[in-house]
Image 1 (cartoon, rainbow over the protein chains, first blue to last red):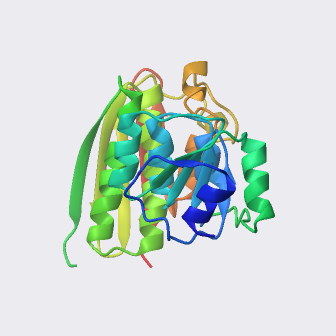
Image 2: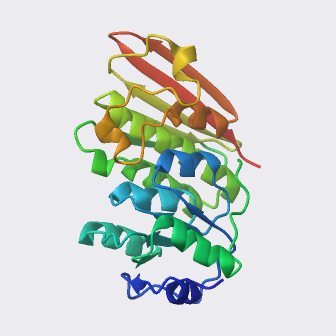
Image 3: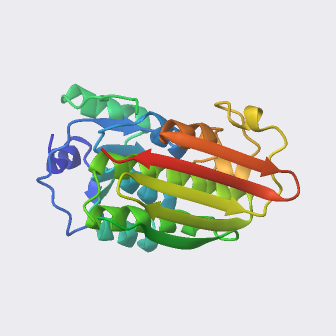
Length: 117
Length: 141
């Protein structure tokens, strides 16, 4: 699924205007606990989260993720967006809840991927 | 590459938002040097968890990363409170992190277990009131 499709499915807003929306992602994960993302995630290109701080971007960067979706209408600050843009990570925000956002993407074919080292 | 390359960082203990800067820099440098992608990923995650721990628990510390022809060696040293029971601290889900840290997405008791999980060799030495030293090694493919 391309990032532009995620944008459409979640009726989301793009917060990093220079992001490449044609990048293809094959799996996603949803979590507010970055420790769990670091522990259990592998090869997921998208992180859905309600957590709103710079460690979200740093975690995504460590995991080679290409897209962060802030759920529940969370709006990251300028410093977070700059950090993401510098790492070529697309940042989206959607009013959907975590459960609904994950469900909508799953319905369209995005899966959870593998979850081990 | 015939000689070892060393990178050194000081992790501040008073600014959690900056925790991760050193790990990101290490990752960037290792990738630029053409180090195996999977080894870089493992080392970066292990180091990031360690850096978070330095900021949360130890009041900051020092990171030294050495790249040899076949291994990434990461040394984390602090002069924090030390760990009274290392085997307990190594068990998944056990944490002494305050609620404030949990609200930032960490402190779930996965830090040390993650560091061990992503390392090919892991050693931790700690003395209460003196500090903690962790050595992690990731082999290059």
